[in-house]
Length: 507
Image 1 (spheres, rainbow, N blue to C red):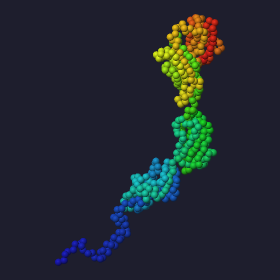
Image 2 (image 1 turned 180 degrees about the vertical axis):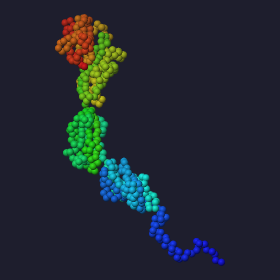
Image 3 (image 1 turned 180 degrees about the horizontal axis):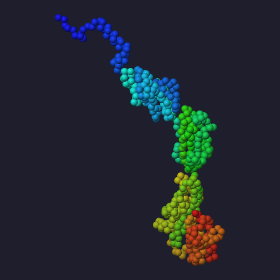
Image 4 (image 1 turned 120 degrees about the vertical axis):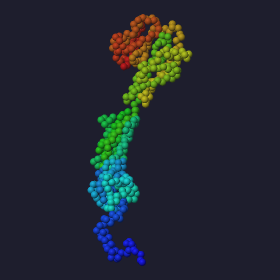
């Protein structure tokens, strides 16, 4: 008995096979989508990124570049996919051209419009993932989502490899020398303004030596200050402006230099933004010359019991700094003086005054401790404004202090003749000491007069014993009122002796 055949094992008649083949062919002809959907599982991918834009630049603000992404097969796009381009400090995100409408094809175009600040020597997208859907879709006919990975930037198939677009939408950078905030700049300095690329005037006029002055501002202090005359030049590359002041700057002058907004641009019309700096020149003004005044050169001061409470003044004419800097003073002493005149202080504890003082008894104390009777040396004053030191024009002065008479009997100290000595200090402010010698008892008057002979003050009016005497005038009249600055006379009358001297009161 023959084995029974199952249906799957039976051989179909020829006529049935022909019918099946014919049906399949009809399905393929009239229902191709059904057949494809059944067999297409391959997603489309990016094959290259190119551009239909012919020129390669440089491109400036407002220029348009069409970026084309080609897929391995035709795709359908919905929404607005985006492509991120590498354009310097700020990347450019550009949209697919068809917006929200559906579009089909293997080539998708993204339109990039150059914006201010964009720059690139070879335009490319930011990364392999720079293409994004942005809420849309990219699919093939079978519904497969496209693979969005792009060729690596710069690699084969990338925009950078296929094209050579140069983007220049960056304004030229201006660098000033001296830099903003600089101090101590030499007064004979020129100023340079260097640009990162060639520049011209915004009306497309080429910068030349005969027109570059118009784009530069040079003033004293600030933008509202007085104009400083200058002449400017431009180098052949049109990248460096040199500003040459007509004369040297002033000492410690604040200088303002600027280029105006919209005055210059590069060769692609990128405007140079307004820029300015201020700087301060060096201090070239030293303190003015001055003279030592008291004690006079080659002075010998004799210390006695009678002048024990007197004060030794060191005085000099005031120095000034026409640049406005404060002038202070330093003392210099040589020989024996530094060892015994160690506590010099200013009369008002201010180093700007033109007077130092030391009580006689300080000097006597240190001389007595050291067991010396005679000291000598030189003294000088240095005026300084913090940068320049100026020595007294007539210094140094020699000074001798004689303490040998401190142990002499008082009777041996009687002067031999009448004398009226120069007051010290002179000039003075606020007071001065007048000393005089009496070889015998006498009726003494010591008075101060102005230059018109009007009596101002009576300092002494009494009988006095022989000896060395002193009187102090504090710059007031007989009513205690302060008198004005000027030259005054002081006159002594002692018996038949009379003498007059001049003194200068300062304010």
